[in-house]
Picture 1: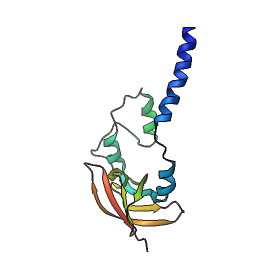
Picture 2: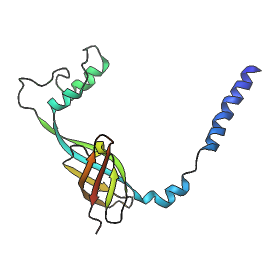
Picture 3: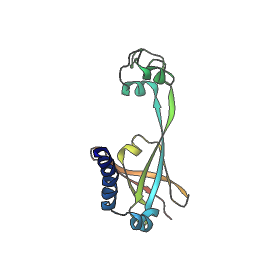
Length: 147
């Protein structure tokens, strides 16, 4: 009997909590078109990437995974052949804050980006210019030509 009570309680509590959550339907219907997809490209090199990786033991299951992309994941910068650069891509989101094309996003989304592309909900794409970024607060402002 006690187990049945606990089971019933565990099913009812999430329903009560869900009923107390705000309904975002109206907000999304009204402002959803302001949300944009942001894609960036940047050139990076294997040495810079290897500096960001943790030191891994060869028995670590992730060692083999990283070795596929970096020949020696534990080898940092040093007397190596010239680093090979490669194109990296990042994705993020943002939202339009003005009719003249200013978009607010996160600084980590556009960090080191050489090219920023914004895709609107109607599938149109625009190249964007980074206006400014604050890494401490992780906020960035970009602009598209809304003409």
